[in-house]
Length: 160
Image (cartoon, rainbow, N blue to C red; front, side):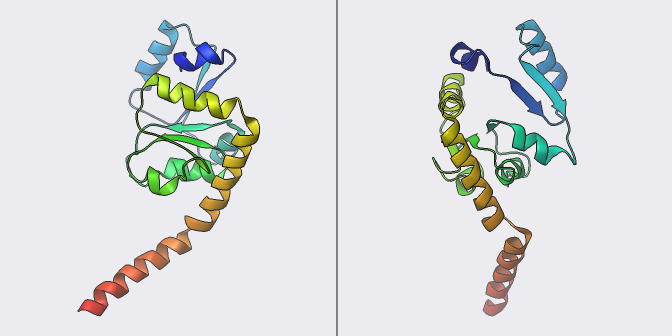
């Protein structure tokens, strides 16, 4: 985030979720003098879609504990453009340059460059967010998951 602030000093960072490292992160933020730039929102429940829709960009540099990247799907469903690392299921979820950006590494310079590109081009960010929302609503629905599981069962049963 410090790298991004060099180029976009007005940027703000919202950290959402409960994490075991929150205390350490809060201490780091305070020690770096970034308390007025970083907000810890904690775990969100019913208001999460609204929180995500209000973001200019969603960032995820890990695959997540479920490897399905539910957080990215939630951001896409809320119409938020995504910047993420090319790990786990993220390459199958995000369409590079269309619904978001996939990064090959998590170096601060790489992340800052990608974020700056999105944040400095609001029209592109809106287009990626809208495309991500359409993709999430069309491709990642409970009905689609049920259909996929049924196809797997049929394939297995046909072999028996």
